[in-house]
Image (tube, rainbow, N blue to C red):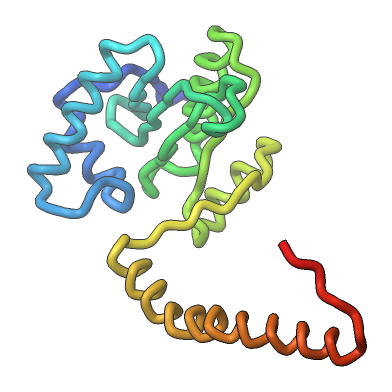
Length: 192
């Protein structure tokens, strides 16, 4: 019985096209050439950094998945070191062969070598398999990351502005009504 070899390696610039296809849901929207150019910059930056790695996993000599590792802090307010395991992904044709485990093992080794006590990662909300995989590795929810285009948030805020403004306009009337009620009872309201 022969075993198909699994190999992990650092990404090189020629992997940028593969990574653009693998991470198509995560890279910026636009032309594929722009996405490849972005990933070439990311690969070069990671290669020159002690705090970042882009790893590619191969199965039988074929590229099958990848992960981006980045040292950071737990949050901008919690300065304890953490390793972000970003976009661990294995192509569907190569799943259930231990490749996701190999990517997470590499992330764990990267963190342990640097004395990092926490690993953070994420999965798409609708990725049942991805979320189950991470849960089996004892990775629980810490936060829910929400995102929307700025123009959509602006439109929602503007739509809510009239009702907020009406509530603010009523506030002085309520204060006057309370003062009148208190003065009719003979109690003087405290002034600031």
